[in-house]
Image (tube, rainbow, N blue to C red):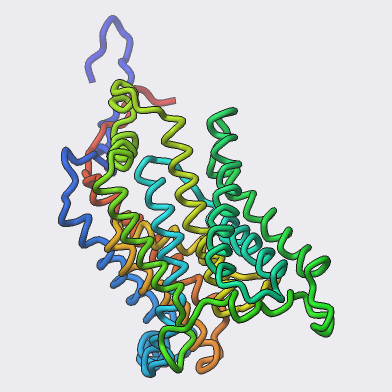
Length: 381
């Protein structure tokens, strides 16, 4: 090696190969077709994972799928149960979807459902000896007001103190649950109920009438269908619905157009509270016929998945609520037939949401592999 002025230059190592980097690059315009097909892909991926999980726990996957998805619908009673459970899911999901379109994230539908049941149940117990025909309509109104009042708390905290509505609405779920537990363990407990934590049974005129003989399906399902139709009209055909979509898609444009952000928050939260409160009435005055420590198996939380699987659209919510209802029925059937734990229902629900969110990532972003050079080492120690 050459020397300069008697000094040997330091050896130079070759630069290492560039490293590979994965980049999520926003797409100029997400595919509308992919957005509509992604729920189907998420469902298919959930079924494939379910097949693997059943095999992993030493259950025949084909028998498990039959028990989970076919057996619950083999009878008219099973179909009635499917529609019965789909009703509150539809109601909660359509109310949440209205707010989600405006980027107002109400996570407390479960608590608003509970408060709707409490308000309606309190009215039913107050007039338990009455045969007045107005009692059931009054219970529906009371349930809607109860859910709306509970949703108004996070709306006020958001608009007054800029508190995050995700946290406040979620924390209020537990307040509502404990309030219901206090009532059925204390002042509203049935004195003739052998000390069980439950209220008196509601009078006949305080119960939703059955619409499908031989099943428990009641008029609450018709109320849910009406709410879905009203939600579609509101979101697609009303000025307020248009303003909420603008506020969700382009907040700066909405502010420039003079659309009140405070009004959007209040509309979003109250719409979700009204729908969830009516869902609570459907449960209390429907299959339960009384107040119990728990009047919902988690419909308010499952409705969040229903809203997103349904793409925040009324028709999609209708179909997604039927799918989620089938998961509830399948989980109950799997507990009895296959001795699987109750958590299997939540497992399928969470997996479905996970795959849906993963599909959304690839709809809005493309994966690109790039190389970038590493820092060169120019000398040896």
